[in-house]
Image 1: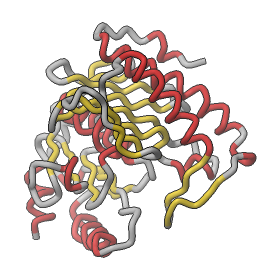
Image 2 (image 1 turned 180 degrees about the horizontal axis):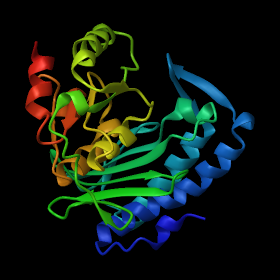
Image 3 (image 1 turned 135 degrees about the vertical axis):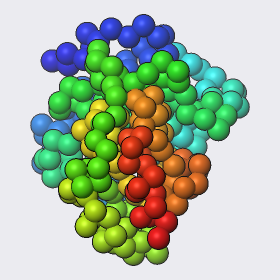
Length: 268
């Protein structure tokens, strides 16, 4: 049973977004329990698409469109779908952590972000296996189920757990990723790669990790997580300090104390 359905959400926007995620999650849980029977086709190196992705995306799109019929979409599987309202756009990843999912590893999530013009104003990330609903709305804070979230208070890099995500596409960024890890590893307590970047960002917001770094991600990997980290009191930027990670795909997300020390290492 999804106990997150009992979470008390006052905002009508958050209700719409969380409801869409929870409905899609029911199908994902069913498919995860039957993962060996899924029809799987390759979408690219290290990145697979399953029937579960498409079912979840269809459910989310239906629920969001029913509630906000004029908003456009940017969907991982279906791409860009403009709406009559040119200012609002849903950014959706119906199943982040697909490779984990297909191997029976219970670490994956649904992610829904809402973009107004060039700014993410709301986000929901739902982990159906752990029944954890992370959500945030601009100016209203970040939450996990009914608990207010704050980023970690650790001040020393030597105590920090930093999460990372390797670029999916083989390019110069793959080499950059290796250099990033080599440069950071001596300064921190540990580096981890869990394979679900939306949950990595949610964990930074929840104070479970002190930072998340990746040189190349898609908008649906970042949208909901960006506002979660910011509303939980954290900092986000591109790896070299630029201000538009959603556009570039380069992301550094940390608590307030470790942003500058990590940025200095990355800028070298």
